[in-house]
Figure 1 (cartoon, helix red, strand yellow):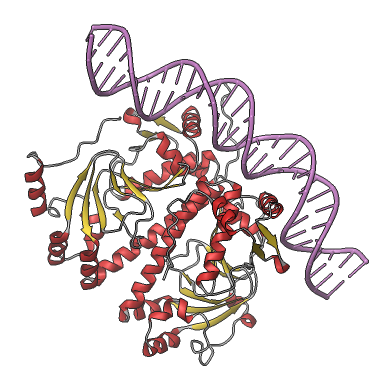
Figure 2: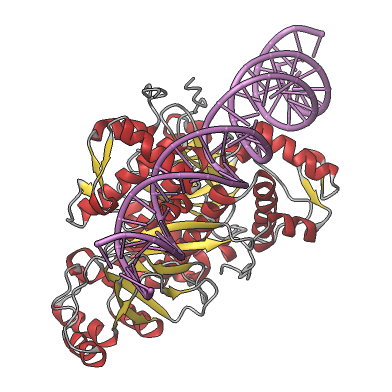
Length: 259
Length: 259
DNA sequence: CGGTTCATTGAACAGGCTCAACCTCAGTGG
DNA sequence: CCACTGAGGTTGAGCCTGTTCAATGAACCG
């Protein structure tokens, strides 16, 4: 595994640490400004803090699985998460990656429609569903905020459908890199060498490709000088405009140095 | 190479197609029970009726285009609609088909993120955005209803991503037919010979295929005795279980009525 | 009738997949 | 300190599904 991004957590042992965090979970939250909580007054935030459980999970742990009773909703406060659906023979489609500030469980009936799994050590605020719904009832502007977030997700899903249904492998990879970059920029993280917390196989299952094709295509972009691989598998975008054009598929050819 | 589909302009330029508000648009509405309006009291319904404009459009008319100012939201009351996004070279992805009872404009910022076009003569309630938002403010349960509808759309979008990214042509066609059937059943329309208001090309652009592949695959299903083509291009499902198995995969196909 | 549009079918092609080998690197234990 | 291991990543060769290109058929409509 690549080096785990260190997660801030109190130095004590587990139970004590959990209690400490629960006392002031929001006060030290680094993503409050970009998540649901940003619309809450101090009083409201306190009410919200009273129902949340600060949760830490290791790489690969499932937050919940498709078909589970949807008893909790979550807000990602550190690390990253992948969401996916499976076919019975094991084929997998990753429907999204979540990063700090993202809300998890917007589209939910009584059972989760997909699986959520930690891509790296992850920190979440867990909200019991009933209690959160009660709070949303009391704070309508919080519901509005979640509605707006759901709308944005829906627009993103439509972009992804266009990508999956109609883009070539090269366009998919280029779009994906730009998408990660925009996300990082939005949450005020470094956006030129971009961090890729997911492996090639996850990228493939997100883009509707195979790992081999992802690998080959990334190599081709590297060879063309559009990107460069940096330490930890991070990616530096060297030709922003070229990548943008490539993502939209305007350009049909640019020769590859044959050998 | 950019063979853009010719687009007739929206109703503003075609006053003939736009009827005046009916006296009692909701009283005669056949889909009230399955659309947003179902949660409104008679008084509230009256308020809603006061702001809507009953609109009729012909086949091929654009209801709005990607990038337009999002000034109106719509409720489909008759006919059907396709939503799509385009790439600069004309490649198209249809992100959804709408039928009576469906709401149009849930995922909207200040501009529409996709184009909506009538598949056949269509009837819509048009709501000026500001006024509808005002009403939603007054009737929170209506906002809740729209939120629930947006959630369902999001779940459907995730299913569609799985289909686009990971299913074969045969699985796509089978899934599509079953999806249409479920939709028809939900809105209490005939669900065995299913009506297909869209052409092969639209189906192809919805499933991430070409018209030829759609045609060939439908022919294969026909040859296998799973379906039969009826008058008007409608489809009779002759082997429900076979089709379900063909659509494949979804082991967790726990089906829930969406309302 | 011709004209237009859409659906179907066939033949050849190609983008991305499958299968398989090899490489890199971190972790582990001798 | 180095060999071994295992997981993930890269690269190659051949193949297959679905595309492209092209021709024909069917339905509709003035």
